Amino acid sequence: MEISQLLKGVLDLAVLAVLREDDGYGYDVLRRLRIAGLEDVGDASVYGTLRRLYKAGLLTSYVVPSEEGPHRKYYSLNEPGRARLAESMKVWQGFASTMDVLLGQGEAA
Image (cartoon, rainbow, N blue to C red):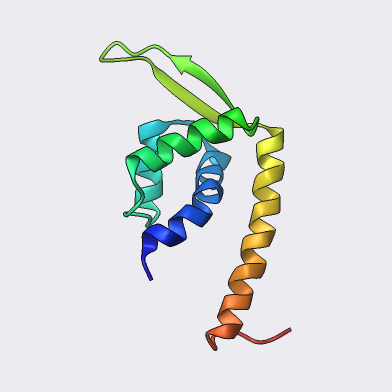
């Protein structure tokens, strides 16, 4: 099984989780995902996910001027985004528990 296939299904959740604690710009979000262990996540995937989540009304954005390069567009989690994160976390936890049972690493409820 390829990690890239798994990432497609959970990248929204991962990006929302990264932005839960601190706002971030594209490369910062990418860096934090990789530090967390998602080394295979692609640049374009993260930037596209940020744009899609913003268009869906789950993130807000603001621009911070930079003296050393282009301005940075920061994204932050808003209330609809926090609600989606909470909902997605429950779905993920249920799915992960089911997979643990199927793989013989957990107990059936």
